[in-house]
Length: 376
Ligand code: GMT
Image 1 (tube, rainbow, N blue to C red):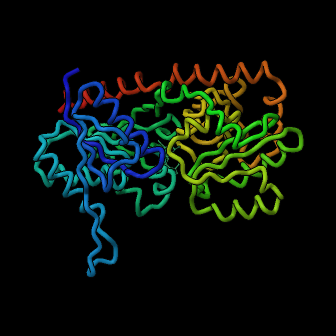
Image 2 (image 1 turned 90 degrees about the vertical axis):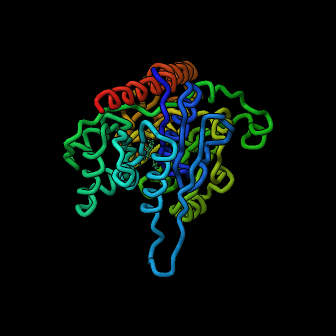
């Protein structure tokens, strides 16, 4: 494929969509494309210098006359500037709103015909799409894009039902680079976090209400009736205080460790045995694929895109929302049957390399870029 100049618009902070956008940019750069991140700060996963990756900052200032800082407009102006100055071939916006809409506005400002590819990550559709005042601008962003992708079939279907866009939606799954998760357990971490007889259960999220971290703690407390274990809670967010209170109430202070936001989750997966993700909404659950790449079986809710990642009874288990008893039963089954555990662990790694490996998924994005450029 010919080498392209690609502008990537995403949220730069910790979060699945920012991770996917940044990792995609890095992998495309490794393949020789020139990548221009246009974001409000340096994406947090952009932790190495690449000669063909550029960063353009959209400054978001507060002005006394404006009640809210004009993020979207500053970003659109910056995108328009970069389209012209760098002579970009294509824009890839992550999130329909605001980013696809910003890209479309920028294209118009720059009087350009540059194609816009939009990737839907979930929250824009599953939360904002329910708000009728937002659904028409989401539809606008999608219809004005040259191609739209969603990170799971579930999200594609849900978007069609809720937004009814005129654009078809391609499903391109999220991805991980399996070699990033081939990490050996560090002895000092293992010694610090657990006794040798203990299993480690891990949960990673932004502690939003939809993640139901309380169900993770309740399930863990039931697991403790049969298994010596520790729970690592990684991340931070609005529900943190509620979770802290629950841990206290259940008398689990010594068994539950709050690690806050962490960047190097691969090292934590390397010392973990089981991952729980018990969300009410989840378009894909990138953290599941990350854990599976480390050989960690996962238990997740039968919600959104999770059943496309966890294959029930093969590499993990699916449960109904709030069914903490079932979570504990499955966890105990895995912890007490080594043969079963080992087969789930191997299947978890295999399913990531077969279905969610970065090398394969990046090719799918490149073919899509080629397609929109040919149709241009
Ligand atoms: O899960 C979140 O709250 C963060 C959100 C984001 O924008 O980063 O995650 C969404 O996008 C991820 C990457 O595509 C998906 O893996 C998550 O499942 C999705 N979150 C939800 O759908 C709630």
